[in-house]
Image 1 (spheres, rainbow, N blue to C red):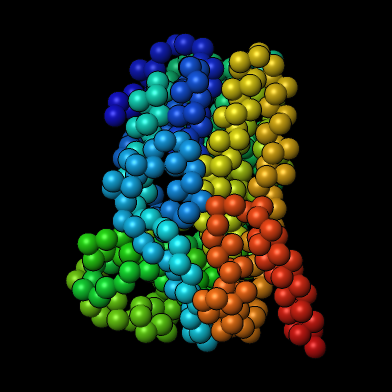
Image 2: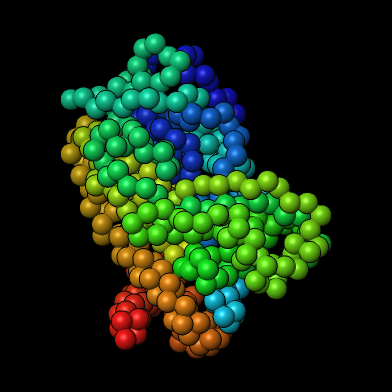
Length: 407
């Protein structure tokens, strides 16, 4: 895959410049390039590059990959996992069958960028230092390049690095929603499902053990930012404590043959701190817009979904030469994505009440109505009747939990 240095990029007027080549940026570039637009995809790092993540792809992610016609490529390299084993604070187990995949983000992100380049996008390497929207174009300054690049529109897909968005007034000056750490473990222990555990010490944060195939596991924990400040604790100690508490995790590490160093990452969830996702000729997608889901921390499928919506709006604006077509993008974020995010925020609040977390796990055996509703939460159809019922249940549970706490 040819990724040109910033100073070697041609002095052309691009239709769309996409800043950031994670899943959101590469999907936007892929869709726009397929429609015949001149697309520049920029990333500050040379690919393939490391990315700290749980490496999981949900059914919602797989559905989007199928729409993009790249699912077969991903499936050829990914490890397929059947379901999730969830453990409440008291270690009551709930099993949720689902079709899931794991693939290191190093490879997954490179695959999507490769497909964007194959579709006709130009891939550049350089750190964007300024994005300046004008009347009919956007000026983009890149470190190491004298002249600015010019594009008719720009997409910011910079993840949790939101300095460019802040200068455009697109985000508030808020810290990330959550922080996480992860390592890769090689172990003789065998797990065939994703494992998620909600220890009391970091509730509603969680420990995860995700099988990657060939005896390798992605192991990590995610903790939420406390009200009024950041996480007050040691993340490595939080991970070690959660592993020591859960027998499955202890067994995994007892049989480990290697453990990689820890990597850390920040997370922006539920559009927290986002003031607007469109300013003039500039759109924000993916985690830059705060698209990661509360509760699960799933970021890939909502990021790719925002990219699909942005690409549609940009195509209409370019095809008809009507910049006003971009006004549809923030409306679609509100109507198509916001309901799912609100439901997951409610689930996170419910999970923070350990007794409620235990209750849901105890009463979620296969065949029960709670189990069916839990399956709806994993569904790629977030506006299904079951999902709407689940949202109402979470809302009621949060209210009940609040009364119990006050009592």
